[in-house]
Amino acid sequence: MTYNIGVIKGDGIGPEIVTEAIKVLDAVGAKFGHQFNYNEILMGGCSIDATGEPLTDEAIEAAKASDAVLMGSIGGNTSTSPWYKLPADKRPEAGLLKLRKSLNLFANLRPAYLYEELKEACPLRDDIIGEGFDMMIMRELTGGLYFGERSTKEENGQLVARDSLTYSETEIRRIAKRGFDIAMKRKKKVTSVDKANVLDSSRLWRKIVEEVAADYPEVTYEHMLVDNCAMQLVKDPRQFDVILTENMFGDILSDEASMVTGSIGMLSSASLNDTKFGLYEPSGGSAPDIAGQGIANPIATILSAAMMLRYSFDLDAEADAIEGAVKKVLKDGYRTIDIMPRDGSAVKQVGTVEMGDLIVARL
Ligand code: NAD
Image 1 (tube, rainbow, N blue to C red):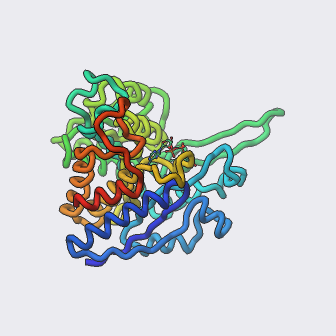
Image 2 (tube, helix red, strand yellow):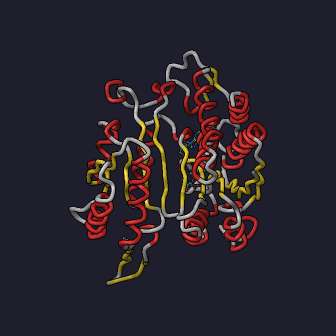
Image 3 (spheres, rainbow, N blue to C red):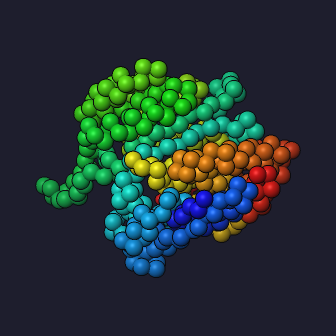
């Protein structure tokens, strides 16, 4: 089969880590008899430099014409980069928000999985880690605070800023269904996270989640307030299977969940719409602090490519092959700098390109 993949390399470490993912995809294609075609699409800071816009209409059309999009990450140092002197709607991140909205990517999946070999990198105590944890954060991605109306106006002699948080029944129902569907393929537990003791949008969220839950009798579900969830993620992460939540809470909790696994450089993510189309990217950002040094961990992007094969192309054996090769490389003792054990023992430190090569060799 032939698959057309839109590729957004982006900024910072983006081009380095995407190059490794493409190397792995090509090796999988050769092994299993698939042709992957790549169409490079500009977004983020590199698009601002080339076109003056973080995302052009042509780029959106190119993404829509692809079977799926593989992305690195976008943005620069938010304190020093000139991109952040531009108005908010011209900055790199505006491109990503616009792309998510244009492609209707309302469901963001972020697995937080603790690899046996990386237990050492987990900042939690051994008795909390236990046998390890494996959860999926399901974050609503196109509604809520990040897409609400906002303004900054002078009132009574001082500036007043407003952001609005809006959710409709339809928006909540479709993400809740996705969350319960995913739970059915996992440990059949959903923790819906909200702030229903304060926010109207959360009270509606809770009501709709309960309605959806009624259609999934096999799934155990519970509600949890977001502040409690932030605490439970470090106190007892093993209790979670699918965490279902709205946009801003999901943004924060998924970073926290990824951190307790030990490295953001290991974690993939998928953003899906109602069709088979998806945007696949690492959970981390563009890491401008280490860009161009050849030391970024490409595994999250490589695992994002595996998610693309599984969710957009239904190529499960091929995705399994990539995930298996990643596990093998860790078992064989190879690590990028971000996942080196604290005591530096018994492993070999490798760079971005070498890590890609080692994974290809184990496919
Ligand atoms: P970041 O995730 O880029 O970096 C946080 C820390 O994690 C840094 O120390 C970095 O070196 C490290 N890190 C991240 N990915 C790594 C990898 N693959 N290998 C090794 N180490 C890795 O977060 P930040 O510093 O807050 O943001 C930097 C830029 O990225 C900002 O412009 C931000 O807006 C942008 N960003 C983009 C996305 C995206 O493209 N989806 C997501 C988050 C942040």
